[in-house]
Length: 391
Image (tube, rainbow, N blue to C red; front, top):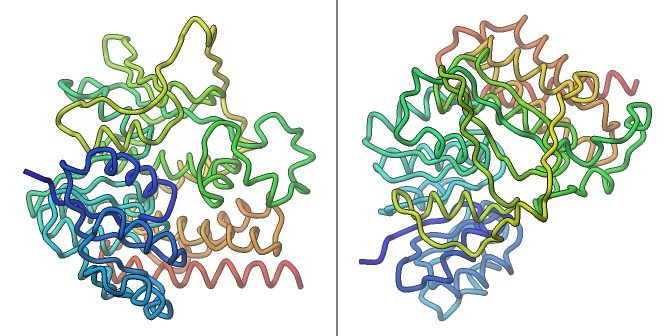
């Protein structure tokens, strides 16, 4: 029987990798919904290729273009936030959550309310509302499977293990585009330079987040929320080869490592096929050719985002929502040429400071509305901070 699946964020790098795996096994999957944002041509092409039931763009102004492109195909077209929620409510066995940003939270929650298996590639969902997401899954008998390569690695290392026997979880980091650049150069690096990852082929935003290590900061917070372990048991280490994705340390001193090529189809395929393992079109590692693996401690001065992650994990509540919103807004400003690479962490730090002073974020109830409220305020505060700095 063909499994019914939906892919949210189909036109991004995770969505495209998911579609690559799905197209290789057309007899196994029926695609219910594909969603995207502004890349309407790609969304139309993919919807036709897999004969989706519906294609949705989050950009309401592009609906006519989407409809015209799908005319005569029998594929429904829709647009806007409400359409995304409606698509998430359609019956599906498996949903890929790969929308970039906090915009992915609401569709993911809606899918969980219908008891589906949610393959979670949207970091912001756990960072901004981890307890809400996990509780929603429990209440509706839904399953969340991690798709970040690091969390998929931890998940796989824990199969058959007791979480109470875990002493530490080590999330590896490539170090990003500037891991070997002098610190004195970082004030002046360009957007183009920050958009080139040494190992992974990813979208621009996540690649820049890798250079700042904000991406890794998000992953540390995700680890706390998904695996429900204390922040003092979560570590990161720079591993330039990006072949070990995570390690789990147990109370007998053993370390279980997940090793694989830097190809997101590995983690996506594990989630797509779970609880089975099936063959995937990824590179088979030649360890003799690789020769050695390297590790180094992350430099706090180079990667201040990691210290911010520790603060967010210890504060809890809605602090993660503030952190994420400020991070996204600072990234927008950097891409637009309105702040320096090194300004981003400082702006996020100041926004978190101000918001913790103004609100009782630590003890706040986490709801979708509360996340949206603090998200909007944190973005405005970050822009205000930049305007004052420029003045």
